[in-house]
Image (tube, rainbow, N blue to C red):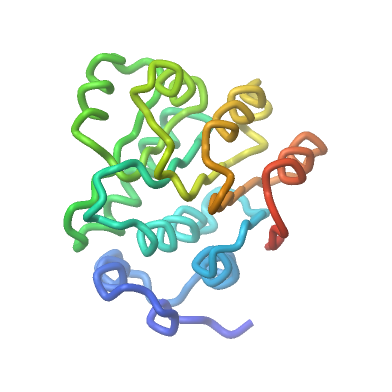
Length: 208
């Protein structure tokens, strides 16, 4: 397969600058397949292991779509563990290094909820969190979804293994269906995942 360079896609110069800064030039196979589809606004099912560069595969299109002038929450990324949430938040921060006015906030259990509420009040366009804690904030109305247009389920099979299916479905119900883009990454595709994709995604493109 030919390598595709990031510069070949219609990506904002600030993001390209960050990508170059991180030492990336050619895309990994998952990035080359997923980035154009996610940027085109399609729902995507990506079958990918950890370490394939999938964070940038959804992170770049996500940043491309964010309106920095709008302080409202526009994207939610769900991860199975706090470690992954922190890692994904760090990588997306690096990708948005040269973009102004973008706030990225990780929210997870085990961290003082009042501190998170205070940070949320300051406004964040991208939230990266574990399903239980995101759910908690939605119930308290400290996370509001009326402007959310993208949700990413990262390591979806892991989240299901950890018993988060109900939380995930509840979170998806909070997000306006009109104009919602749902992107799911999973190493395996068990039946419960296929159920979720059937129920919450429309004409999803599958990438292996």
